[in-house]
Length: 515
Image (cartoon, rainbow, N blue to C red; front, top):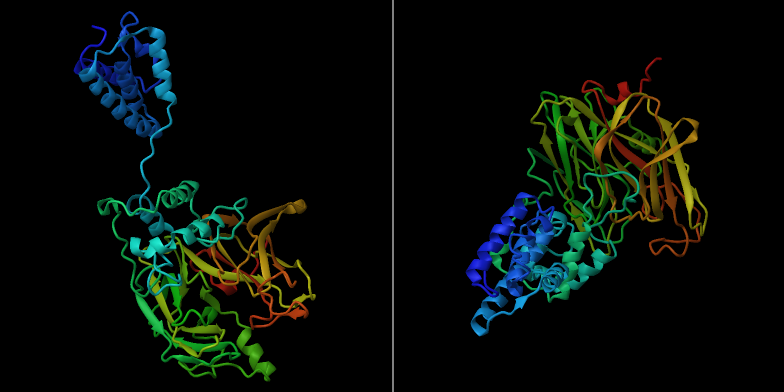
């Protein structure tokens, strides 16, 4: 072959060489180099084409993408050189230099655009909240909606404020972790640096069809408060209870529950209980009517608060949906009623709430029954100004169970929460550590893989409170704080879901197994 040769000849020989390299899975450049090096004479740009062809066929995806840009540039330069002047021959040393330069050249990066790169990230991590009717303050569905917020989104991602997630990554793996992986964070950074371009609409992924009026999916059955409940401006509202009959003629298995406030801005939290037909709890209260035990009646308060009823679902800001893996569900017996406990916090303007409950029934055989258990501290005493007051409670599981999820609950002074197992000989294993508890984002943490807890497992829950002036949400750092239902008082409850045999109810679960 001549010193220059034709572009077609060199490209053909390059392609053949690349094919050989592909067959050897990119393990040896030297073994195939003899195909295109003839007595150390070859067109330098021809070698460039060949090397780029070789790199383009390597198995590594990133190398292929970078090499394809190098290939296009090399072929372009070679074609121009054929028309301008003959390409001088190169000795083998020059060939090696060109080869190394091409391999070491920085890859060409394609532009990051909204349609191709950013929209898929928003669909996966953000739109569940940032769409009309949901808790997010603005929708993030289209380019026009997102573009004005680009820099604010970048800042929220940098500070790990969004998506909200507070579990310490050193402990446990969770199925519902919405955190952005580093590559997605980098995409957002580059998109803004490069001018936040929209891109080609044809690059956009398919539109996500979110259920109207619900977070996860359209429920099989909706049970609602019969009428709105008024929330006066700046009012202190005691816990409210409302009895909602199910009229179930047979036992039903529920695999998903969504508690949907009519005005999420005034619902601090809600707990949905299952009152079975034989239970005497709140039997004197008529169905469908809001009830609050008189604050002056200690007996009525105790009767309302103290119940052994199973919990069907819990609503907190950021956790409206309770769901369980396939084959696991909660049982609502025939003839049972639902009792919804609501904690309202008034705003400066009057409002009203008409909460709905959406139930999704199990469509597969149920092999495990889910129970919601809880441990907490009632005798709370937090000294004035205490920056780190730790309150703990421990207990032992009476029976074997699968741990599914954990949901910490505190009020405005809450700053951290821990779930731990105390093993024999005192070794402590942390299941969940929430280092920065956020009163406005009370999340449930669902384990990626359920954890088997043998009978006798000793569980420890710890709540950390900041009653200092350094806590911006502290209503008053000068006072000693005790247990109470209102947000300026405190609670410390560690909810957790476990799975047990399908015929075992909560009462049977707490009957300890005999050795």
